[in-house]
Image (tube, rainbow, N blue to C red):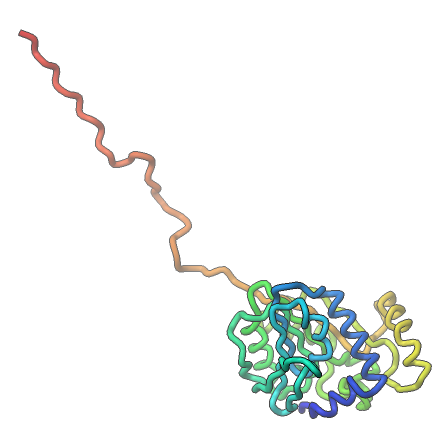
Length: 251
């Protein structure tokens, strides 16, 4: 079940805990994918808080928001790039997107397989997707005071297995949000410390998983010119040898 877009907006833009979570996740997205010119970057679910660094250099940025969630104009004060869509039919051409981020779109969907099919369809060959989901062993999935307390939480093995079944190749994974999901001033003020500390301790369970995956592209097995010619022609093969002229009789 998708959360309402107003609840998501209020959390990420109007609470201190939401701004801390937004910054921690976005910093890791930018670390994986430094903004680059000429790329098409898209987000599905409520991924727009992570897309702002890409607005200026990218060829285009698109924020797709599923119908059950609702849509809001984004970014504020600029030309709108967000759009309402069916979660099983995105209004994008096949192979358009170079970088795709899904947040609050997979774990809350009633049809995650169809979401992954659409993600694979719109992703360009060589493109990358980043899936941001609640960590089933983390604290954030166990409390409903944040959006990560709703939907189906994942382990890394579960998410990677699901991605492989839909034509993705998992490349790397990591945890973020190591501070507890509380608005207590101490934890909010020390959030940056806990993020840095957690990344140095791989055994710690962050509240959110980030799995980067590429799209599998298979070479065609038939079609086009055959790669092997059983009896290749040699140079000048088939050209008749010159016939010598008959000698002239001298009288």
